[in-house]
Length: 294
Image (spheres, rainbow, N blue to C red):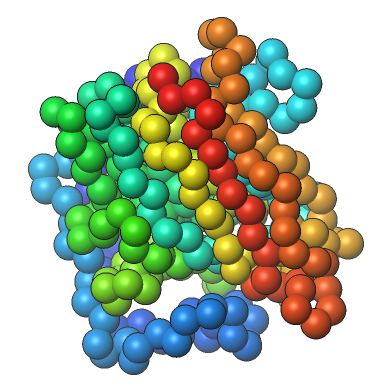
């Protein structure tokens, strides 16, 4: 799939924000039981993150496969993807990394998210955060996106904030939720598959991405390292694991610039076990590192 050109972010006017939301584990179609190390405050004390105006240049993209690397290579993704099953839920917690715009050029990006589809499909249901450099200054946003529909961005997040991004599938719709555990800001939207598309729930991912298809359409900003924790995945049959599972497979993805074979981002090994005390669902982690920002 070819990288996309820059696209001005549009606002999905038909999707209403929900400020008061139930606990993440009780969302429709998702398994019960705790899967966060923090104790979220009551939903009534949370506040909706405001939509970003004016619109920002940001467009995510399904995985763009590379051709010049010995393992799974992508021109825009780095992280892990599950496949070989049908999925209904994924969640991850991470701290928003700080961009070093002193060495990164204006217009360079960094994005982290959790999602369903996109690894082997043309659709992608995702939510997370992104940042870019402008005038030597970093700018931080939350976003949600139902590819191929345009993304929606939100202000109110900051570097160092702990955020939990989750995607739930239930009753033919996808509930996208991001909770800022530091400020109690929240985004919650429930959306159908984009008109004319077929969302297959064929994948579950945790990814650090250069949007707009990666280089040359967009450059990677220097974010240093980001740690993803508390990863939990559930399939349509109710099996609860993480990327390690007897019910599905996973791939480790490196971002490699397809024009020059430079390794841009690299994930660590997965930490955590498949099952048992102290492992399994909600207890897995890895890091992603910016190797060669461009």
